[in-house]
Amino acid sequence: MPAEFYTLRFWIRIAFERLLLSRGLAVVLTLLVVIGPCACASQPPPLALAATRDTLAGLDEFGALLLGAGLSASSIPQIREVSPEQATMLRRSLAILPSVPRQYAPRFVADELLRYVETKGASVSRVGLGMMVQEYRDLFVLTPEGYLAAALTGVPAYCVGAVQVSPTSAGVGGYELGRYYRNSGVNWPQADAPKLDRN
Image (cartoon, rainbow, N blue to C red; front, side, top):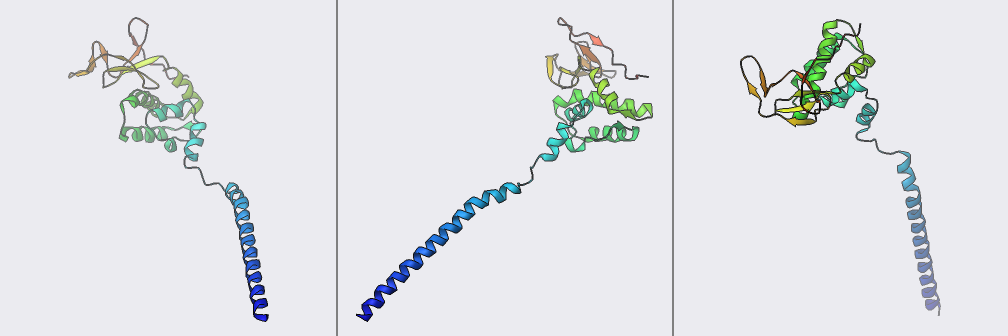
């Protein structure tokens, strides 16, 4: 009888320990499930493109032009004025960057504005540069691919044909590289470059 009692007691204890073990395991797993997401939510991983997003959110007209010209978002200066030295540095950066056809027209305009800052010999405010950018909104330029493209966005608007290069100029069908044109609805007459000096 004592052996049977011991055996029954032994099995009751084993069953009770397993019950406690499974209950303890269940409590631990529940805590991990409940607390785990809270711990993750309190410390979210850094966003991969946060710096780019913040830069783009703060872009002005001039910054958007530089971005369209091929400058990376992190290379766009976050300053209130552009000095002649900074203009030179930005022109050099744009000159060595590889480009795609759509960047040609914005790069052409950006280069013109930066050249203006260089030759002026004094800093120009970003607000002033933004106002100058607006002067180009209705203008188009001939791209090396033979399209008349919007000066600020580079979006092709009209296919002229293959550009021919001569000793004195490059162009096609009366259109030349380095000149501005306007869409009159019927044709594309040449337009004067915007007057940048606001003094």
